[in-house]
Length: 396
Image 1 (cartoon, rainbow, N blue to C red):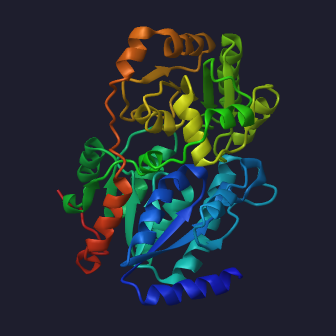
Image 2 (image 1 turned 135 degrees about the vertical axis):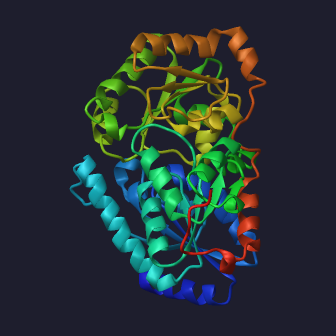
C-alpha cells in the first residue's frame, strides 16, 4: 500500500472516531517514549493515531530503526526522508532537514486533518509538527516541556512549549517553569516520563542470550557508552568522545558502545568510534537496551537515559559534559567534565564505591512511576478540545 492510499484509509477511520492524534517520530529516543503512548491509544475506543516516521529511523548508518517500529506492529501511515542522500551532517544541514520536515508534515496534516498533534520533547521534526499545528488551528499537546538542559535542545524545547496548548511534563519543577512562561496552569499536567512505562512491561531477555549476542561475561562488570554529539560544541565532539573511549579502555572494563543521534557532528563521533576497536552497535531494540542497562555497572555518556531510565533501574550513570546541564537528577548520577582521568575516577566510583552503591539502592525516582502513558491518554480522551482556545494568551 502506498503512502497516499494509507493516508486515505486512516482519514476514513478517523472520521468515525472522536479524536485523531498525529504522532511524528524522528529517532529512537522519541520513539521509546511514544511507543507506550501508542499502545494505550490502541486500547482506546475514543481515539486513533496516525504515525509518521522520518529522520534517522530511515538511515542505514543509524540502524534502520523503522524496522523496530514494524516489529512492534504499529500502523505506519506515512514516512519521508528528512536528510538528503549526500547529507553533510552540519548545523546548516540540520536547518535544511527541519525545513523539509515542515514541508512534508504540513502536507500530511492537510490530508489527515487531526484534532490533536502530539509533539514530543526537543526534537526537530516534533518542533516542526508543533509549528504546523499552531498555524493550521490544531491543538498541540507537548511532552516533556519545561526541562532545562544544554545545547540547542533547550531552545527547541521552550519554543515548542509556546506553540503548544496542552503540556504533559515529567516533574513539578518543569510544570512551574511552563506556568512562568505564561501557559495556562489548567492545561499543565505532571505525568512523568513515558519511557518508564515500557520498562515496567519490558520483555525479559535471559542473561545467557545477552552474553552470547553481545559477547559479554556477566560474571564481570560491564558499562554501556552512549554519547551524543552536542551541536553547540561541534568543533570538539570528536575529541570529547575520544576522551571517553580512552578512559574506558584504560579502565580495562568490558563495554558496549551504542551510536548516538544523527544531529550535526555525529559523523565526527562515528569516525572515532569505528576506529576505537570497542564493541559497537548502531542501534538496539528497546527491550535489548533496557535488559543490558539493567544488568550493567553503569551508563556512561550524555544521554537523557542516564538521567531518567538508569536511576529508575537503580543503575549508576556517569553524565559527561554540558548536554544534560540543569536537568533534575538523582543521587545515582555522577557528573564529570570532558576529562579522561575524571571519567576513569567516576568509573571506579560507580563500580567499587560501596557507600555510593548502597546509597543508590534507595535513590529517589524523579520522573514518575511508570504510568505516564495511561495518564496522558486518559486526559486526552476526557479533555474538551472546543474549550481550548487555539489563539493562546499569556496567563499570569
